Length: 136
Image (tube, rainbow, N blue to C red; front, side, top):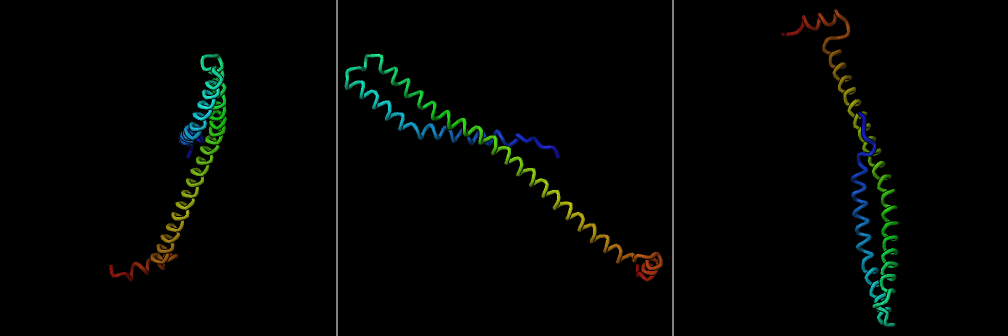
């Protein structure tokens, strides 16, 4: 049974994406504090109308983007590994199911063979005697 080794990767990537979004939301209060501090410092020195505010906001955005981007990069790599591991587990489960089915069929076949041997005996004379002595 052929299987696509990447079949579980999209689901793992979706979970990773959710984790990255959660990380971004968790970092939001820190980002807000940084913005407030930068604006408060610029205001305290009378520099709100200067070019310092866009520079400070750019630095804050770069730091935030670097943090979230680093987490996203790590999550993307791990999601590929998680998807491949899930595929490996699925293949192992399929293999074990096939072995269990084969064992069961072998046991059923052995039981039927034993029963047929008991009913019809193993020699032709025994089979004829068994049938001749039958009330049917």
